[in-house]
Length: 187
Image 1 (cartoon, rainbow, N blue to C red):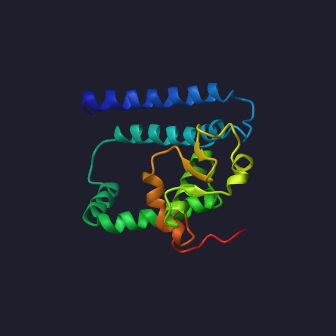
Image 2 (spheres, rainbow, N blue to C red; image 1 turned 120 degrees about the horizontal axis):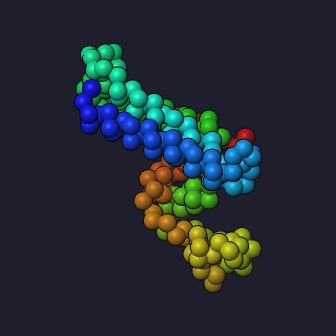
Image 3 (spheres, rainbow, N blue to C red; image 1 turned 45 degrees about the vertical axis):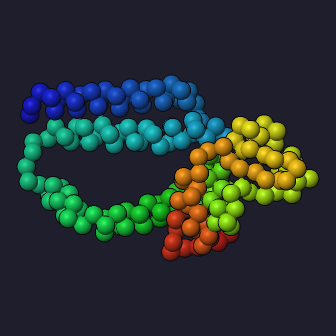
């Protein structure tokens, strides 16, 4: 094992452990995280697991190198990138559908879906009845997450439209998270 490889793995393990400790401190472990604080909930339930995976990868990198089955698998993936990308897309869409119950979890995700539906309908903004704009979009959200034009009822997200444009074709067919094989039916 060379010195650089060991040093890099040690730094990665240190960063992973530090991130776990900071997440636990921020989310006030051992107290239960209330789901209303979605970012704290997601940090505790998902990012700690991600840190553990990173630590495991760093430790696995310290294992002696050989022509193992894992390297042969990576080699076969590199010879068929489009097939791997397609299979990964289908797998990730299915996993997101199962994990998130086909619903956006955070406000940012709701805004991306909202704008993708507007783009799929051929518009640049969402349209609400002008007399109901202030009832449908609370004042706290105006100009913070949504740009609202009261006289016309037009509403747009403050975020850049790139991700929403990527989702627009899927919103057009009724599958905003890319669930091509299963149209989102109300549950």
